[in-house]
Image (cartoon, rainbow, N blue to C red; front, side, top):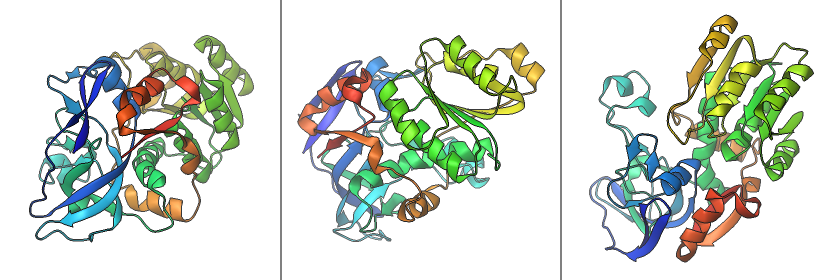
Length: 344
């Protein structure tokens, strides 16, 4: 079978590998579609995320949808020929944090496509049956892939505890930021601000109902504009989803006294700077969002009820043989890319 292996920053190659076989409790999936996520972009650009660096080739991809080709002994919930998405997180179920309801913080977590666990950019994948999510006929493969992204947005919104009428700012209008915007509206948010450097992404934010979509050329100017619009008060809840360290400072500047900041993005260099005196004087609550937990049922219900729009986030499709072109397109924000898919 063909697989796409990342060998280091900027170097990804399609190679041949043995086709796997499922064991007890496992399924063999024929992978059909894989989304390129912001974390994949970090691996491609930097050979890792923050201090976690890959030391051997890695198959990327954790946003995955496919078809069940074979079912191992004892595997339940799915049948051969069924279309499925998957939960990329494989918690141990036994550590303190799993037992207290926080599997996303599992001490022994294995995560698909995150070093050292190979991901979904391969034609066949063996995966635990109990982590598969059957896709109803009304749900496309693209939407199945993006259930994971929606789950991340839901988890972040839960951390923000948006109340009806709250003003909300979302810094970064990538797929996660745009889904946080949609979830914020469903949660009853009042005025919604969205910022980004790219105008095509702000156009999408406006289409999804942003009250203010502000292009970032200077972070200080954007902060001043949001404070001007709010008459100096600031915003109730700020979501940092821009993958840029400096946006955390913007979040602290525009958050109102007593407000909440939820940091969702992954800063490329690891450390970020929070102006502690400003945050202390304002009495800000700062939360870090770690992937998601227990969100798939809600994500599926919102999708089936047509309360969220996932399909319009997908802008590009590439065959596996063009995986390097796909990653270059995403890494450099070329051609108006928002969400790129690899088709297998």
